[in-house]
Image (cartoon, rainbow, N blue to C red):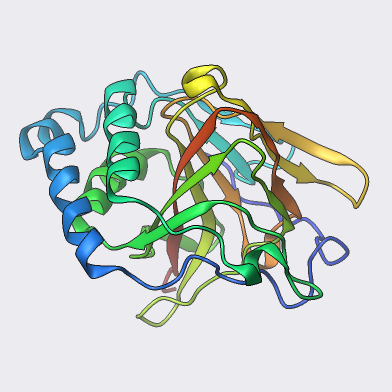
Length: 255
């Protein structure tokens, strides 16, 4: 994708101290089952055939005058892959929200969802090969991969994620830091009876900048860290919303 990321002044929108990471540590027993299921879903032959086919993926700038700020990419995952991932999530079982999530302290966000954190290098390779040609440009930096902490999220009827900001994370090598939150919606409006669950970005405390409705297989990239806007996961009014999430790592380009 062309264009350079522009920086919005988000200082008035940020929650002081940033959001708490409510997803917990890695559950090794569940992680091994997830990796096994992912191998069945994505298999080596499938990855080889699909790795650089970008013709059927539409890239949309959700804020046209801010190139690379909030970007939606359709069909990152197929409908079949999404269905199998949803089955995996329900099969392994996710962690319910803690009392700390449901009763946040000052400057922390309310979170009501099921979640599970895991690591999977094979999944990272699949999505990296599909996304690499489409990643937004960030001035003076280059895309290198993903934070190796993947998260499954399930939002059921009545659940939501309150207004918050996403903090950046330093990488293991000098000059590495995450620049984007990556969300992959595993179902869309009407699928699994879903109504609601939009991702809403706020320009100010009272003015919505844009609203993104879940679509099956669609990837949403939004700038985080110093560029992050206040945003929320709207209430699921009916059905269930399934999401795959991680953070996108960039590194400083040596001069």
